[in-house]
Amino acid sequence: MHEKFTHMTPALYGYLVAHAPPPDAVLRDLAEETAALGPVSLMQVAVEEAAFLGWLARLIGARRAVEVGTFTGYSAIAIARGLAPDGRLLCCDASEEWSAIARRYFARSGVAERITLKVAPALETLRALPRAPEIDLAFIDADKESYQAYYEELLPRLRANGVLVFDNVLWMGRVIDPDERSSSTEAIRALNDAVARDERVEAVMLPVSDGITLVRKR
Image (cartoon, rainbow, N blue to C red; front, top):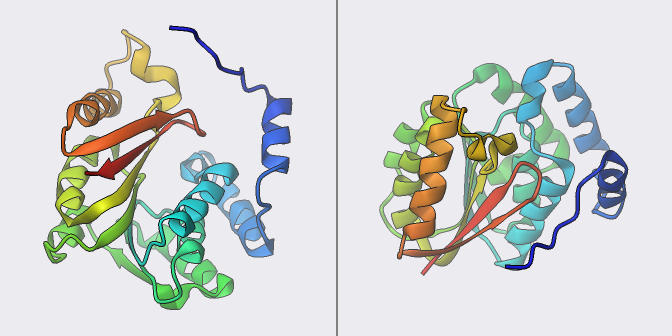
């Protein structure tokens, strides 16, 4: 198979970001406040990934969306802005500290009324949802060891042709490092293999940011 890809240098990445929809003042302030948290700020989605999530929500006309792993709220704002006028986003996160930041920026960005933020173990929140297939869009960006469990809870609740997005599926290249045996890496590998074999869905993996997989329910 012919390999065709472009090595992403810092300069080329800057060019890419410059040609994506620019973050507004609220998102710029949120990114700055999140960066001040230190190394944990790496959990925030990339600018172009957030733009893609909002675009995807608009593309599929999403009205009901779920996010697992909200952190300080950057991706949630992007998704909520992309929902239909009557759309709702359920955000799941286990940290009250990070959720407090997210709530402030939800209010500043004008999307607070569209978002329900549950601070609790995500599996508990997902299992409490109706089993009806009414979710249009789901984004999973949380603890890697639970990715498959989140998937199995969300998939029955996803409508036909609904889309589920996994983040970090390339895991900074560690997925192909034979010496990398951490629980998170093993969980990502297992998830990637399982989704690729799952006949209930059609999936495509893309090298956006740290790798995303788009899963369409058949």
